[in-house]
Amino acid sequence: MKRLVILGGGVAGLSAWRRALARGFDAALVERCARPGGLTRSIHVGGFVFDYTGHFLHLARTAHPDRLGTPRGAWRKVTRRAGCLVAGHPVPAPFQYHLGALPEPVRAECVEGVGDLLARSTPVTPVPGEDLAAFFLRAFGPGITSHFLRPYNRKLLATDLTGLDAVRLNRFFPAPDPAAVRAGLNEAAGLSGPGSSPGQAGSTYNATFWYPVGDGVGRLVDQLDPGVAHLQAGVDAVDLGRRVVVAGGRELPYDRLVSTIPLPDLLRACGGDRAAGAGRLASSGVVAFQLGVRGPVAPLLTDLHWLYVPDPSLAFFRVGCYSNVSADLAPRGCHSLYVEVGFAGAPPEPGALTGRVLDDLVSAGLLADPSRVEVLLRHVIDPAYVHFDFDWARTVPAAFDDLEAHGVHCAGRYGRWDYLGMEDVILDAAALVDRLPAG
Ligand SMILES: Cc1cc2nc3c(=O)[nH]c(=O)nc-3n(C[C@H](O)[C@H](O)[C@H](O)COP(=O)(O)OP(=O)(O)OC[C@H]3O[C@@H](n4cnc5c(N)ncnc54)[C@H](O)[C@@H]3O)c2cc1C
Image (cartoon, rainbow, N blue to C red; front, side):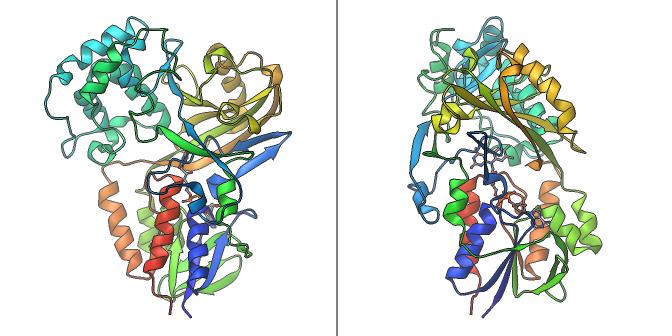
């Protein structure tokens, strides 16, 4: 029987483990936390259910969430209602398809800037070496770039967009569809709320998502958990020559290793030149605040699942309302929010950010009264967003080739050092284990 060691027990690691046990591997999972699930866990406190910031299951490859593991309860399909907070107004997302709903003079500037692009017969695509800031200007025009794309992504990724590779990021920022932009020009400001706007639902890949009935997204972890105890330990070292993982003072020999821990951490655990290579992998983090609040949600957030916040003077880049997604997530008469702040480098002390976040929520009209906050949790997610800089293509594929030559396979969002959602990491980790020889 082949020995398979899996590093990291988020949904990718759990999916790999489940499949490995089913296929008859002698499999072990190393996870540093007592409770597996990683970023997909939910937290139950004071009658509220929070996720580790908003986590919504967008399915592109699976018919129903029950197909991801063993069904543990009902799921509901939800049509996304997202907005962008621009000059104090919530306008529907995606921004570029609702220009008519923007307040003046933002509307006029965005419309003027996008004008020439609408006449093009072929979509604008990035050229090799083009940075994201330059591509935004060329593909979306100066108005959309300066009022939304540049400030929002600057806050989300906490880095200068001129250092990011537009070719690699194009799948997240395709040039706008001229017909959809034109349709959005006719929207009257103030008449179509973010939830009711035509075109919102069909215009992007994640227009719908699934969410558990009666619980948080952690339901997905329960579906994947094979019910076998994992080794609770951090990975101290990986000896590629001897094929041994050192964790929690134990040596775990393997024939194959599946790693879902962040790629830089794996490379550091391997030591030598590989550890030095870890320093070339860039990313940013997120401080996530979870708020359980007495009373109704602020009018700006009524009916919305989340708001993108490009304004550089406000600390957060996104604010969402869990209880607008599912009323089960907050006690009656209360609502619950998540608030996300991006950072680069050393994580800020979340406690020190709290006052600023609360003040900014109040000044933006997203929280009526901080004294109504009954539960306030803070989490640092680091890494949160991998940076597709110009080093990524030079570094990451070569690292995978080198590791695979030693029987080490990477999976998961941070193992692959990529932007991957829950569905992809679950399916890809299982498919990876299917390709490994078990006997
Ligand atoms: C802000 C934000 C919002 C998101 N929203 C969505 C969304 O709405 N929809 C969606 O589909 N996806 C979303 N995602 C992505 C989603 O979180 C990931 O796709 C998914 O959680 C990745 O699972 P994973 O198992 O690959 O990684 P993780 O969940 O990060 O799990 C990795 C595990 O490895 C463990 N680990 C790490 N280092 C070590 C070590 N050295 N030793 C032992 N164990 C270790 C960790 O404790 C963790 O349990 C979001 C991500 C972020 C950052």
